[in-house]
Image (cartoon, rainbow, N blue to C red; front, side, top):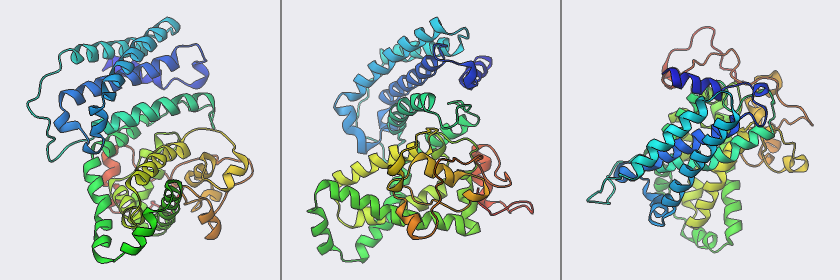
Length: 385
């Protein structure tokens, strides 16, 4: 536990105490790579339990083996670099130790008699891909182009949001079933065969664009409802309770909200007959886009901000300033906020503060999980911030 505390303290080192060349960035990436390598080994040890069938082709293609070798090598190289550069060795030694354990486990992988996945599984491979791709992309971006220079990449409550990240990934089977349920009902009740024939013949790029526009329209109104009705706001307040915005902040969502949001926004996507490849492309875009708009990236994108949601646009939605209340509901296209009177984006300013007005949401995953089901206290406010 003492070692773990030292590692966390080093991860959360203030920005002014970790200049470039201090070994902090290499140590953080080394720890990320080594943990990813260990998780990949666990995935290979227990594929029937941890594999997500929809992306099983990745394992069959040999990409997992290549990824394992890459992350273990990266873990070794980056941890050694951190040990050379840093005067505080906790990150480097921990990353090196995890890499060694993962390497030893990789050489003693047990044999399985059956490759048939169980009826219930956890998406560990889904989580690994998320951490590797998104983490390796956004940690350096937030380090070199921060909107708030004083904010650390591993800021307060990052462990909590990483746990949200893990839970939503591991419950991918349950969430996938919930996502498809309303669409399956609509398919059974509404005859749309003629519409589907026309849509499936559209060019690929047009299908992706239509999916994004249609789902964002539905998402806008579902999102707005979560801000409008107090009973829904108590679920959505969990998402707004983070006081520091970064690529992990988007993961902080109550399971009930995830279920409602995904199931309703997926209706146009899965009922109108779009090519599955276009749907997969949309899901990939949205996944990275969600991390991007929450990220602590200070880019000012000029005219692009008129047509697409950017970090600055979405950060205003999370602001607790008076001007930031109940604005900017769109996830992809600001035009919906223009049309329905909820658009707010000053020329250059960013919100000063984030979080829920009144700071009424408790800390900790399980306390936040039961928060919407508890009786509101007199000092609680239903006002979003």
